[in-house]
Image 1: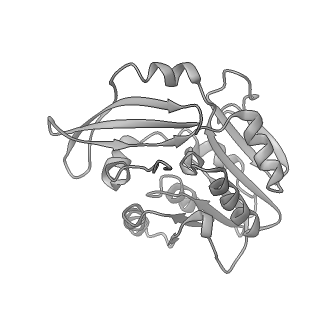
Image 2: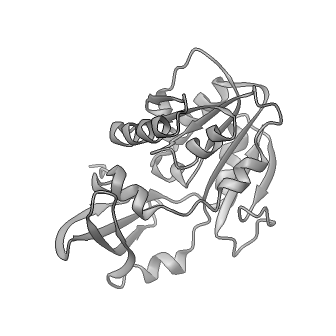
Image 3: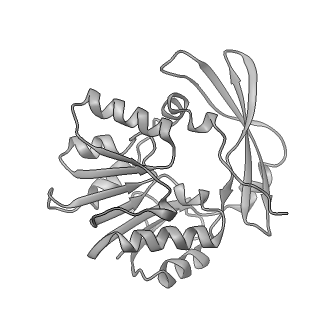
Length: 250
């Protein structure tokens, strides 16, 4: 029987998500790869609550955001409204995306491809990217470079990973434990949530690991040319100890 992999509801609680994910160290990278023409059409897949969508729209880019989670999109629309921005946010599964237009740049940020658990899921998503990309357009995505030692160490017990207060007044502490499966290449991450000093729940953050040579091949067989592959958002050369795999494709 195939295990069901998932992301827990609290992880996609928009207020918790925003309070935990305040780092936008990838924003300058995506800015550098934006088309020079502000009339170009930009599509962000797995946009969440607009962490990147909102600042890019504020700079005048014509950007559309797509996400699977209604609550995250609701938060994104609230933020856009507060900034007097007109951004189209679309609720959709990126594996089944069917929009009536094409785009000059499509990107999938913030390690989101790790939630495409089967090869078929990844190929479906890449095919939809290709179908929605203008001729000569750019496709960018990022993910982790798997670190086996880190994942093995994560199996040894709970460790604290975050502590924050949400916009709606919840004091949240998150502790983490991992279990990596060699056969599936899925790192099953348990996040133990403590809210206002009391244990709340255990939520899964399951992530499919993609190894460098494997992912290079998947990108190429999906019909893309790799223009650049970096080991960080500072565009360092990708190497063994790089934390990230950052792809710029065409």
